[in-house]
Length: 474
Ligand SMILES: Cc1ncc(COP(=O)(O)O)c(C=O)c1O
Image (cartoon, rainbow, N blue to C red; front, side):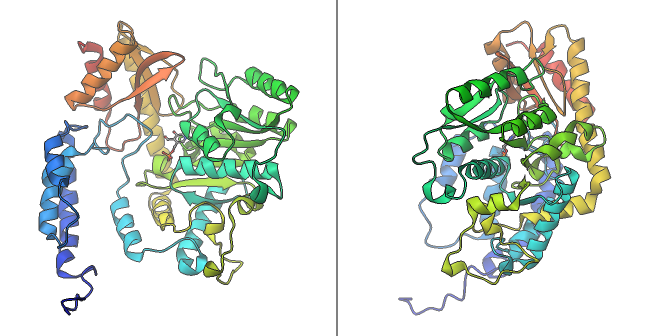
């Protein structure tokens, strides 16, 4: 230090700059939730205010917390999209449950690194119990797995494991180099884009991903799937994986998983099920039968930051065989060598991440604090909102459904408007600040999508949204 002044660890918690953090957090949350309903769901972005806030350079000296807090209230919050607002229903994105601000604060305070068990023993035990609970919920007893940043990461890990099992012992060293027979995989035209992204990242090439047509209910067509596999075999390719959906991203459709499993088994293929959206509806008696066949999957993605209403981010992947994860992801550099222990798992060997947060705490606390029965009730109440919307849309002569309701989302359109007109309705609704819905394109037709995953949405919100859309002049 050129000045010779001792800085006295200025970043340490409890130093003058942060001593009001607790009070400010509480005040912020109280104020935010008190005013949430009256805010526009999506802001009219004040670009000049954001530019003014962000135009300076990297500061040499610190800014008092009160000033930062003032900026938060004045500029940041008014330019946020309010995802916990009762009429925020565009995507598979929940409002977080009430434990989350507390759990996230504890996680940041403990700052466990869930890469090696020695750095996070309690977190390790908790992550293991979650994987066991999820394995039991889906009837994949003894499943291995880990928490991930979300469904996209879970899908990536599962497809890496599927690819490497097919490539065999030298998967890590040779990769895809020198293969004569291209690896091909299959999924429906309703599948989430994270699958194609994973296929590209894994070096498989998206040309090898066969997109199979879905039926009127948005479920994969098995006849089309079988003929795609047959023609690839004839051409000398190696079909290695089928990706089914337990809740397609746009309409919430569930593929015929039992039939997909039988087909995959007949061809020695891996069955991955993307259950990021819908798998956790298995917590509810109403949806359990629909999810029964997930027990047949070789791997399954699920997202606690969806139907467990956990804050971002918390996903999970389950894989039937532990060795499939280790083949793809284990490493053993000298600087990470730690004693292994049969009671614990080094999660760094199960996925691409090294440093990992203590995500398990918020998921475990959510399940323990609320319990399965409360989740069943909430999940079914969300599905009831989708059914209510479908009934109300049916009563409006100028509206029509695009697809039947399976889970908790509903897609519909204005019959009197073309695709562009329906998008104008969506824009106008967003601009009004009253509600935020998403766009939906179902079998070539464009409309609107409501996905009910918001703990604050009331039946009266649904009725008001339908009325507005039906009467809107665009
Ligand atoms: C079916 C499906 N798969 C994957 C994803 C991606 O999940 P994440 O956003 O957690 O990465 C989503 C997100 O909505 C989804 O609905």
